[in-house]
Image (cartoon, rainbow, N blue to C red; front, side, top):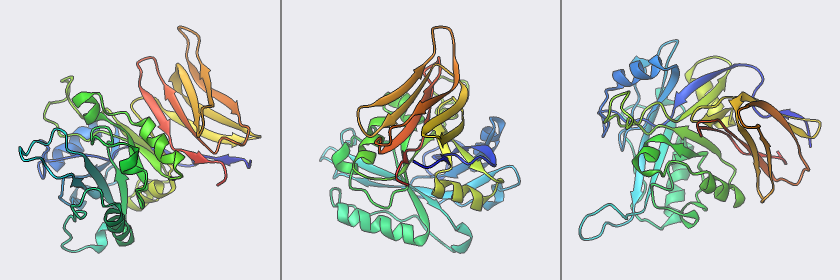
Length: 319
């Protein structure tokens, strides 16, 4: 097992919301409001993922803020005669554009509307990847999906391990089990924590769906190309509150450094889970976990006293 830094040692962390809706689809804020409100709270990156609407807003870009060009596509089961969406299974997929400056007159494209035809969906995803889009698989629990729906998805670089809007809607925002199910089938993908904000309720209202799930990107500098490269390489972690400062494998052990938390877990491909737990009334800011080498993959989860969590990406020990 070779020594390696799992998160880059150099650079700086930048806060990102990678799932956001505006008045261009079913959100209540304009793109300018989104930038202003998120910047107030320390965000430097927002992906504008309006439903079926490709959002590239270069006028918002400056030295302190990167708007990612993106959109959210969907693939639904046939609706019942009543037209009720309540029990209709669906794929929701975010597409992040790696080179928006090269496109002229681009419009959001939908996958073939044949739910259950994984070959057609994967062919569509392969085409989007070839065009220069990174695809994220969104909120499996809200989508009423199980491992049979998502285990064979190809050309997906990440999935949402937490979706704040879904958690507020019905306690179906957390998806670590779905992430592990994907990993255990051999899918080597990353995990994101997002808002999926529509802003029906204003900040301060307990139902406000903004500022609850975020992704921390480790970048050498703040720039569009740097954000895309961090997403490609997995140089980030997902969170609802706690910070992960360092993740290093050194001398056969995983070293974790984080903000004060009560619990640090290391999840593996099997039942064996490594953990360090603080005594009542105390906190941890790090731990070291000896590895046996047969874990296949490892991922870190840190939980604070409020139940908020930070999730690392999965790291494969044979890389």
